[in-house]
Image 1 (tube, rainbow over the protein chains, first blue to last red):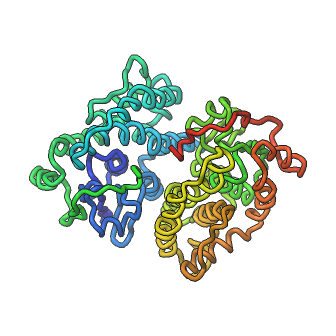
Image 2: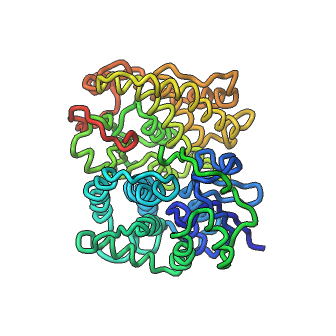
Image 3: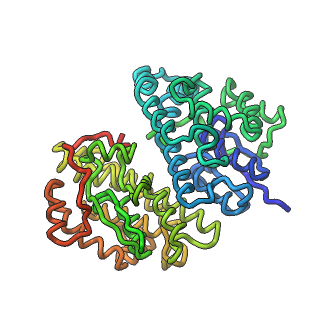
Amino acid sequence: MSPRFTIVGNYISPYVRKVLVCMDLKGLAYDIDPITPFIGDDRFTALSPLRRIPILIEGDTVLNDSSVICQYLEDRFPAPALYPADILQRAKARWLEEYCDTHLASVLVWKLFYQKAIRRHIFREETDEEVVQRAREVEIPAALDYLEAQLPEEGFAFGELSIADISIASYFRTASFVRYAADADRWPRLAALIERTQSLPAFQRLAHWEDLVLRLPITEQRAALQAAGAPLTPWTMGTDTPRKGVARIE
Amino acid sequence: MSPRFTIVGNYISPYVRKVLVCMDLKGLAYDIDPITPFIGDDRFTALSPLRRIPILIEGDTVLNDSSVICQYLEDRFPAPALYPADILQRAKARWLEEYCDTHLASVLVWKLFYQKAIRRHIFREETDEEVVQRAREVEIPAALDYLEAQLPEEGFAFGELSIADISIASYFRTASFVRYAADADRWPRLAALIERTQSLPAFQRLAHWEDLVLRLPITEQRAALQAAGAPLTPWTMGTDTPRKGVARIE
């Protein structure tokens, strides 16, 4: 019998998306508890000490951190390979993943998406337009300049599809929810790589659920996903009133 | 001929220490440019886009991020193994490393060591005692409670020495520079693991250089290390006046 995994984490999160894309590509089935970290209850804190998503659960096994989970899935289910076979290329792919998880996330997700969407719709606070403006005009372009310089003229970052492409495309997908896209005139390699990666069936299948929940209040998302046949867990850890304090945005 | 690596990064940094300990354990020689990120010049920015240390350089190869570098060294020089052989244990070791690199670093290094040492001695600013007090009374104890619960009654975290032990011991070594130690009565497993790991020759050999530079102004460290016979690069990227903006403390 193939293993059955549970993923705790919302379809809107780029960290969750990285893991779900890897699982799809490796043919691994899962149930999902589509919570955001902001509404995770005390059971969520117990399983994710930094109150981050995703969490991977399989029986008594609990793993945190999208990069740790993706590498674990690669080690356990090596085909198809999502990390380059060459040792140096593999290190460079892991670095691009780390760059995305920390810095690209900081500028695209926390300074843009969080400000424009989460802060407004979940915490009922005003967007800090100064933060958004600085991100749009200075920080995001600098990050995209760096990424563009790391990419080949065409194709994926390291020949075959890898965790580097999946990471980049995941963060830009979340940025697209607040209508941000990499300008193909200024960053042609990056824009082409994003389009190529987001066109993969593994991304497209998730886009279906993302589009479904995107405009719904958090409290209505679960019922809508259930009605549409998403692979939901029978339980949920997302029963709290929204609270701040997620490690990423301390 | 065995490869010759260059490491850019100061002996005081826990991120640098992780890499240097792994290199020592694997018998890899290196030269070091012992700069802090705060005084890195434009060549430093070009090689480390987030202005973080360490950087590993070998000919045209440049790698960033301590976790990426340690995993690269493991892939290329597998003996002695510093990551558990068991796939699930390996994932858990990587998670503990990530927990240290982000959260333990946040509370021990950025809220304690940075406030008490860097801020005062490099930037000539007052320590924010409120940040330090909250770290000491609330945040550090909570992080140590979590770590204690992950550790076995005795020995290293996963039987043999691994990247998890090296990471934990590295951060506590930097915390010791501002006289912080895990209380062995409250966190006996953690305190014993730190002592066991820091007693290894690979840590002890670094302690020699750490003690040498610890009380010296940054501008005098290089000459003192040179006079004492440390494995210095003939060049340095640390020629700038101190500036902020390191990604970790944004």
